[in-house]
Length: 84
Image 1 (cartoon, helix red, strand yellow):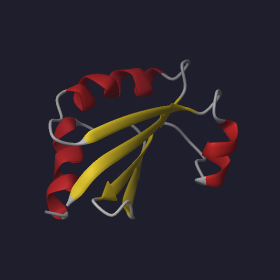
Image 2: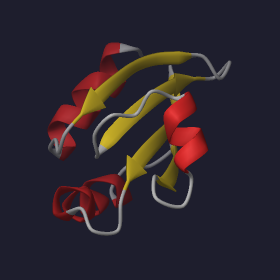
Image 3: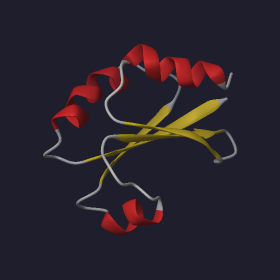
Image 4: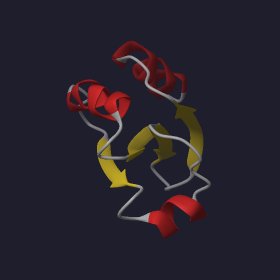
């Protein structure tokens, strides 16, 4: 079960901003937004090469999968539902 999504983004990234609306509609999942320009070391450690990147975690904090690029609410929920 997905319990947390980390969103790697940048303030200058239009697709990142567009995805905020989709993420705000997700309930019962913790959404953590991480700006790569303010958190370069974390982004490097996580292997982030482009934004937006979503990393999906289960209840044990284990990374289950990633999506790269702007995706729709339905696409995000399809990923989430595939782990439920």
